[in-house]
Image (cartoon, rainbow, N blue to C red; front, side, top):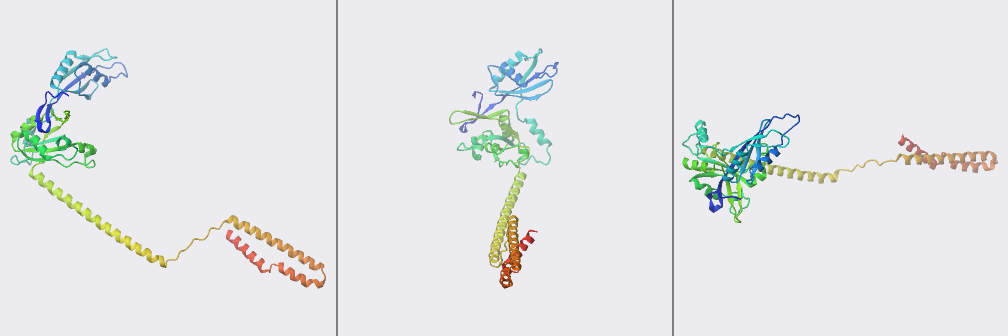
Length: 383
């Protein structure tokens, strides 16, 4: 909300720089005499927030917790508000927590500004091996900026690809730029342990900016050290981004690394072409095999004979049918016996006629023999 301390970065793009106002607070913990007694970190943070009122923290977080001390880091909106907060914390000197007779001693001071110093890059390149200070990219001339919002460096203000011309225009305020390169977005599968997500890649980007002169590089590093980037939109609202600025430690924009990336890109394109060609060959082979299968199928339909499985025979129905046949045969046997008895009683004149009638009921009758055969077959099948 307060942009009074913001300095101009590139007003035509709505970009400004504002110093980061951070303080560090150490809270000394008393000795816990009662078993099971503990100190709430949240309660200590609430006491610190009450101490600096009416100023407020933009954020307050614990950095380290031990048995003797809790270390906090907090950020305020301006340098003046951080000075007032430090004065109040130093004036109080201690905190009183419920359940503790001893007061907790506090110490507060300004946090060191984030970012490398001149001593850091000079010692790095002095001790580096295999570099030549006469070649661009192998000396302190390139800055590496991370977590830049994509929509601040696009013409339409949407989350598309950042515009290199706008990036050159913004960072060209520190000096003449030799080369700018925006690395391609990393995929979640290629990132280490899923460190970056697809959402992160869509919103933020990184860039390598190489200056022609060492003095221009130093101006850029000193100007961006300990600063956050502000953006004032067309509607008048101001947004901030905690960018990360460092000098290039990987020689990313050296001629050697640029040629190596070009060779790797050619290899990647060739491998992709080979994969595409292999897929096309596989598709052709599959289509040819499918055509051959269709022809074989059509030819076999004329010659092959369909073999139907044997019909299902219900055993219960077969048993009932066999029982019926047995009953009928027994009935016919009884009738034949009765006929024989009658023949013995009747006179001889009627014997021949009775013999004819009895023969019709004998087992030599064709219908009877057929039924017997059918019954035997059914019984054998059941067995």
